[in-house]
Length: 204
Image (cartoon, rainbow, N blue to C red; front, side, top):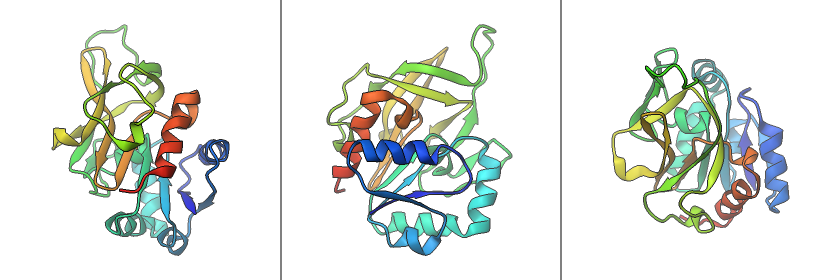
């Protein structure tokens, strides 16, 4: 069973519908005990990292997610879920889960033509092969909505990057049993479903 973590950060049903489309059985839960019993977890999210961290702590989900990740079972982060895996976020100057070394920083551009948040379809440049990307190729496009990006301590954990303005930011990270996308794979059509299907097959 895959558990999709509910911490009032939106888009949970769309993630669950995407799971259904690729034949993955999932449930949505905010119960730390249920999460710790899962085979795999999906950690999605939209909105503010500051309020998300407050909700995670209030429900005891922060410790549950970290404990689950330490068990070696697969974790999939999506958008805000990726950002909260890091040590820290500029958004609200909050300490995050510390599962991946790095910090989340806000886009800053001098070019007025570049909008924040970064919204829309953009391509990825794959740095190295990963089992979850077995059906994805360099240059494939996915759907992004974000104002902050992950700045990793270890560049080897950046599986793909994406260019926006003069920035080349991390669009996919992976570390051991963790895999996370800055884009919304549940809003990225057939390519997003391919990633989700491969996550379902993945055995780190």
